[in-house]
Amino acid sequence: MKAQFTLLSIVVATIGLSGQTPAKKPAASGTAKAVPYVAAKPLGIGRTATADEIKAIDIDVMPDGRGLPPGRGTVAEGAAVYAAKCQSCHGKDGVGGTFDRLVSTDSGPNFNFATDPKLVKTVGNYWPYATTLFDYTQRAMPFTQPGTLAPNETYALTAYILSLNKIVPAEAVIDATTLPKVVMPSKNRFVMDNRKGGPVVK
Image 1 (spheres, rainbow, N blue to C red):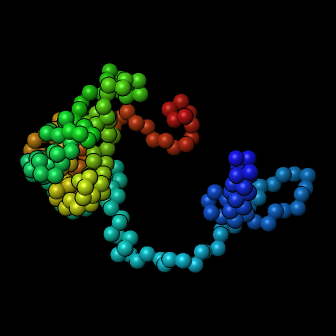
Image 2: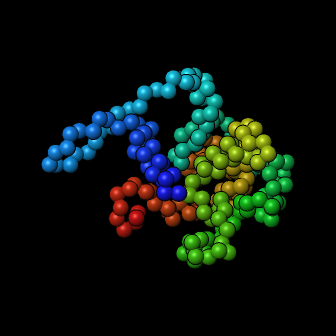
Image 3: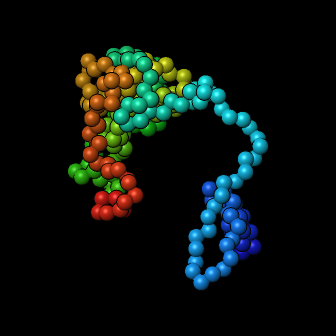
């Protein structure tokens, strides 16, 4: 084990954790100086992705709505899609399925997820951004056929699940304009980790 660790240390020290190679070590002097790093040479394999190839997988959605595609969906439309493609895993009305529960408004008296194992994290009581629901559903659902939902189906499912959690009304229409405006119940329970430390971010 000691020999393996030593070898690993040599490899890491040689190539650097970022894939860079260290520059030539400067001559020793009375004052220690940081050793600069230079970019590693290209490996000479593969090719640059085309704009169309990048576009095909560039489907992530930001909290402010950037990345949302054209389309729309209603709660009623979402109920039909859910019954056909989601209910078998997540249960009727988002509760009681063999996979993750989607619906709950209980977050404890003080957002007690860290101390109360009975609290289940769901879209309704834990997720801080409504756009995350669209993003995750679009990329990863249905479990057996991820990425097969059309934008209108994903908007409709988003509307339906938000409605089940009593976040939007039953007549809500969800699209690229209305979805980023939805305020989730737990939004103010999270803080931006800006790596500056202080009493909030540690």
